[in-house]
Length: 369
Image 1 (cartoon, helix red, strand yellow):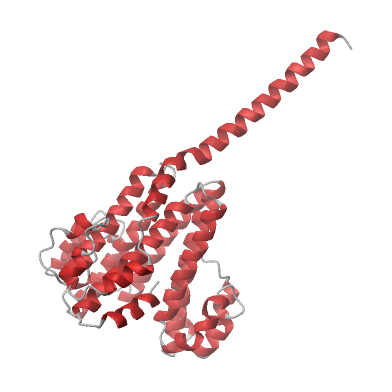
Image 2 (cartoon, helix red, strand yellow):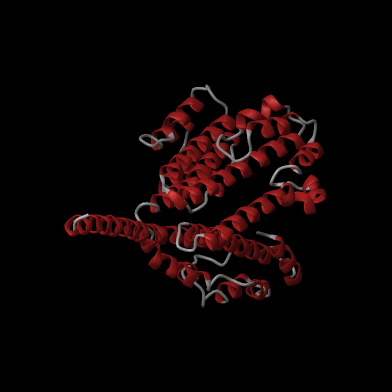
């Protein structure tokens, strides 16, 4: 073979190798580099999350004014600095605003290809608020008491709470994706329970659609996160139904499609006779380990199961952060931990206001997720 032919083959081979290396390098940079800065910043914020010792110290505050003072060296300082009064409700709303600030930060610092997911997550608070306001209006209760200062449409939600009639709420929701579902409720085509279910179905459908539109690790992480949250909702719906003696055909319309539990497992759970049997059936699923050690407590209080499922989701996303350290798992994990921290702070404030002794507050807060 002539030297020129050999040289040509070598040049072609080298060009292909460099092209492949360049492609792989570009892919790596595209996948991981955008997470370097935000994840470093998030890890710095994780270092400021409260330890059990810090919660115990806050439980010793004795008064809400002391509680607020004890948070002056934290990220909550700016949100608590101008409270109208030192009461649990004011503190609760300030902590919601602090959590909303964390979501806003995620929008700013995360790569453009995933930050819309965090806006979708924030919309779940819109769903909760809309459902709460509508149910309060129907039952004749003050709707404003059921609003959380979180979500993408808080001013509109507050306007709904102040509405003089159910028809006025329709005007407020005009132009939103919730308008059509609410109109069906007004026309009597669906009841309030189905109204709430349809809101959540629409929400989780959007989350799944977004997760499935991503690539590689982002698709894996976001998909698992959404499906675990759907499992949590479905399991709590089924078990609450069984605790109240409801039949499968009554519970089934309230389920959200898209979780990790297959139809056969869900049908089995739906068709058992009572709560105890449903929990026994769950023992053979991946959630068996979640409830095994608290089963007797769960039979008495399903909120314990809610707590354990929340803990399981947080644990699973935490595992994914170790497996994918430069990924969307890191901000997801931080958001879950921050939400848990806020829940504990709210609980401490309410227990202090109720005059609960510090040692008992520590016990109660220690059990929360």
